[in-house]
Amino acid sequence: MITQKYLDDLTYEVIGSAIEVHKTLGRGLLESVYHECMKEELMCRKINFQTEMKIPLLYKEKELKVDFRCDLFVENSLIVELKSILQLNPINEAQLLTYMKLLKAPKGIIINFNCFNIFKEGQKTFVNEYFKKLPEV
Image (cartoon, rainbow, N blue to C red; front, side, top):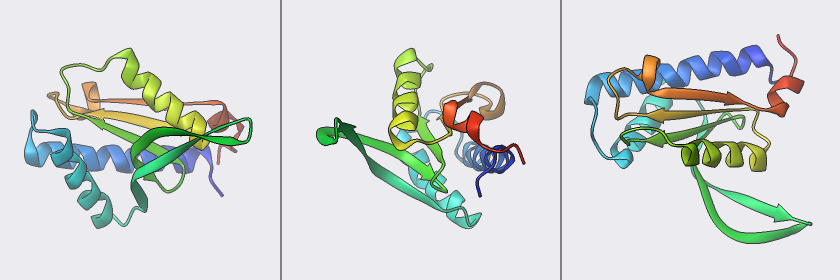
């Protein structure tokens, strides 16, 4: 059963993975480089995930054609969007919140590898109404 604590612990592990990748590679590389390294780091930590997962858009019981893909969908409950940009913009947050809503995922993280410190400035975590409905422990 997924709980808020489980998701908080999972978030801690994913951010730890990003810190390890960032510590090893530094900043300023292409997003695709960080993506491949994050996949490797999550596998080493035995964390299940899907990558480049297609996100369906259902409207009035009809699937519409969109090409939404989340970078990482971790343990079927946590969306991780990876970036390597100068600064996060509202569109990046809107992208993550959209994916969270469409997949009914209770939590999401944007990780920006183009920073000096992942923990302090390189990640932003979001929760939604699905998270609030989960048991705490």
